[in-house]
Image (cartoon, rainbow over all chains, first blue to last red; front, side):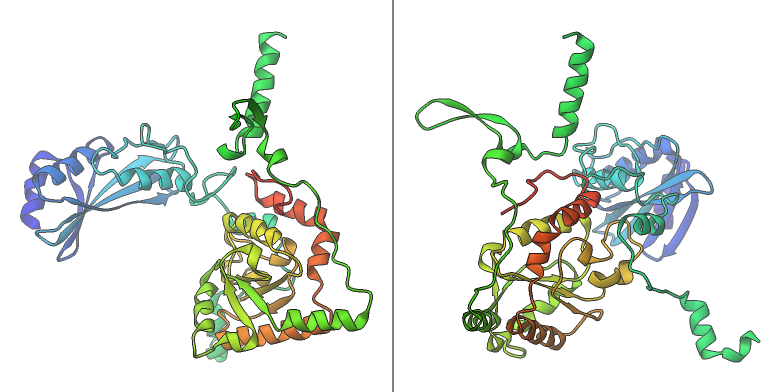
Length: 177
Length: 232
């Protein structure tokens, strides 16, 4: 794995190399070269299996983090390629030509985070939600509890406790005093 | 008509048709004898009659007999909506054997008269549930399984699951728990039988009486309403 990273370092500008496990490493690259790296890994480094494409919303930094997780079946290890894109008018180059199933991930990200992937097949069709007209629900500025209370007729008298404080007061009542 | 008004009319049409499924759009069809006719599926393929109230037989003995017969033969629609659907298959297996109570599974709404809402309902599923429920013949009963149908359960703050089933459909019997075991379901069936035999399981009539209220609630959250108002 180290060898591979060193080799990739020569042609791509990798940052934040993190060896999560023996067989799993994450690297971060700039938005422009992310798909170049994915393509390079697929064609020359044996990462023939695409595992997933996921997104993390870093609202404080104003960024979305996309992770392309690739698997090398012969070497039995994974490589996660991370890249950061801006939250405003979020858009990323579509990767559906590398693996066809990426189109489905991109469709989901379009619906859940509002990230646009121009040219991706059926990316504008609704994926899970039907007739959704709010901001994409997985964005962190979307207040899901408030939306639920406004929309779904909450039943009076339903209470909930914060598990940590509730269990503390139950198990160690003397500590609070 | 100027171009501008033309555009406005087209925009309006587009908005109305935005959610309509292709098979439900107005279109021209060639009949077997060659004539071309225009069909509007929402008007032509579905009845637009409102649901009818079921009136019990005027002779009490006969009505009691009918209720007894209904209670001993509950046909459940095999429609699993949440985690609770996994509690339904064991019911029909020898261990719990719901058949001894006259409870059996059926594949389509037209063949069944008990609808078990087994757990959380997303908005997308609710649309299908409403459609299936309305297609079931009278007399029909609804069993709500699990706390998700009562107050939202652990999904009370989800953007996509409803909190209270009774706002969208009338419920005859609630079974609390997360998840209730098949024994609890059998207890629920027995409770439903008691209600039917006592002539108190009349929630389907409540749906008819408050039809507009239920429809308004359903349409409030099902924003892409692309089916007829009443699906019988």
